[in-house]
Length: 572
Ligand code: GTP
Ligand code: SPV
Ligand code: MN
Image (cartoon, rainbow, N blue to C red):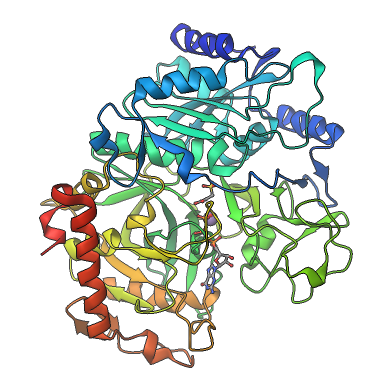
């Protein structure tokens, strides 16, 4: 069995002393180990094996279905370093609370130590972490989402300093108490210590709360590392777009949770001659290289994608990706396969809903939870970009910001310069979705789609983004998009999905300088697009008065929220 460097072992020993598990296992990340976890969970009735090879079904506790932003904390020494958009807690006070929460929390359970690598093994930007958890569900998801085991251990033994994370579902099993199918705790805390690069997560087993490599490390902790070290950790998908002439450009795009990243990353274009390949669907780590270009990597190794709405029609590549070796959580069971809203036009008979009950079609309740997810390997992606695992990353020429907006924001627009592009990012807002707790549909500001994920003061984040523009650098062009405009009847005007290729093609050609554009004070818009859509001109235009009002409100928001720490360039 592998050993850990002494300093790391000491930290793990302290976790063991605190959590008092019955047993400790260091994960090697092998396929055999992964299958062993699944077999064990199946025998416990926690996982259901499905008809398709390597596919399993999980159901969470109905009270543990999404990220919990109200219980997510940035514990920086100074409150102002967390900024106005994060919950802050004093590190000492939080450590005390955590010590009491974690004390004895793994009694009756096994502690799994998961060394993992975020990023392609060949790439110097990749980083290591260790997640210590009492959840086998977390182990199997981390196996898919990160590079787990030996590969990371080797780096750690060579001196790489891992971001440490301790996770517990928060339900000890004293005196042989039987386990429940989805252990969790009413009290949840997701605490980040950016200065010491530590993560503590208690009480939830779901998604971004529990898979610490994802939002906790690759965004919240990484964004603070990126600021210190001069790079960018962004909530962005990465795609390569090839035009009919065979020229290729890479784009990175930030959309808030459940606003279309995974779908755009896997787009099957509805425009002859164009090709799109996927590098990543959620997170981008980016850095300017000596050649003056911005290079991106996807730190993840899998997809944790929204299931509802995914179908052969909307996202055929996703349907192919999830055909084998996929974990499904909170979808509906359809015999020995799965179903969710939007997969087919008609609802099959005899479904078991995500709560484990017979689905009542008349109830008006969905059979799958709106934040039901699939976990599937990146390598399954039929349009995976050949440079996904490259040593260098991929050169980004376009950055896209998009939200879910039923009015005001046009289908696509181009910023005149980096500063206006930064303004697009800083003023991104979107109607709330089911990816986090709370009411859906409400409009909220979500700068850079990073509101829930920025590990420091968002005003400083804007300044950091702005400061990327330097002599000798080829700055990407910046765009704003919106697939979600609605007509008077509340129907989407834009067909979306494969047709989003029209917007991508326009952006590609805008970078090349070969499109016809309408100039406004707020950026450039397409004159037309070669597609027949009712209301097309409406979504290709802005109402300058309405838009101007939105811009003024946005500046007010920036000023009142971030004060002096908002760069002046965004307010003028
Ligand atoms: P997270 O994984 O939570 O960060 O979400 P995401 O940004 O990856 O969003 P995803 O691609 O999973 O899409 C979220 C929801 O929006 C799904 O139900 C999609 O079917 C729907 N969606 C995605 N793209 C489009 C589009 O172009 N038009 C419309 N109308 N809906 C879309
Ligand atoms: C998101 O909410 O943006 C997700 C899901 O991608 S989670 O991993 O739970 O954060
Ligand atoms: Mn996604």
